[in-house]
Amino acid sequence: MDAATKTKLDVVPLTRHIGAEIRGIDLRDRLDPETVRAIHQAWLDHIVLVFRGQNFSQEDLIRATGFFGEQAPMSRPPAFFPKGYAKLLPNIMLISNIRENGEPIGALPDGEMNFHHDMIHNEMPHKGTLLYSVEIPDHGGDTLFASGYAAYDTLDPAIRSRLEGRKALHHYNYGTTIRGDTSKAVEAFHEAVHPVFRTHDETGRKAVYVNRLMTVHVLDMPPAESEALLNAVFDHSEKPEFVYRHVWGVGDLVVWDNRCSTHARTDFPSDQRRLMLRTTVKGAGRPY
Image (cartoon, rainbow, N blue to C red; front, side, top):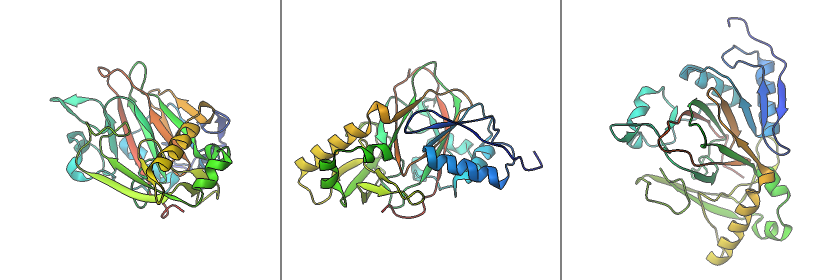
């Protein structure tokens, strides 16, 4: 692994609108700059990248995060870290339902999770997320990714014209997985205002930038009108034809672009262990 490895990427699209698998590459290798640029371009082209069969240490995950930009600091306030975080390198989040002495060792432990953009509730949202699987249940716990580009491009023109140029408020309580459910939430929360439709700062394309879990309302719009329009956008954005469903295997690394996609999680057996390591990539600025 001393010499830089130059690899011709084998990029296999997974659906028409979103997702590609990168085959035949070991991300633990020291990749040459041309290969890293090609991976980054594939990410911009396909929104979600899947690397199967990786055998990562925490250090490997941090190094791979650097292929996509500057690693972002941990998004959760230190006071709310589960105890398992002490076992991880800084800025790695543990996503797990494993419990020690009855307490979860990681974040977002159980059940399904509505479609959302990571960190949309912050003033400076993170642009990308990496998730690496260590342990998975026999079934369930799949991650669904929806293309914000495809949703915007095919949105009813009447709905799009009513929302173009407007902004929405996004709010999130830590621990919440279903919109409106605060039973598992803790006190800490964040909220921010961003455009309903976002321009991607690298591709220049527009994408839907509201989601079912975290978007509260459209600013300067009557509540009933805001609710109706947002629900129409949510339903449209989550159509199966815009979605790639990832069924996890141990050693999978999945990287997604939060600027132009949402993701959700399906339910899984609560008595089976699920353990994932997560990092994020710092955004370049406020969404516009």
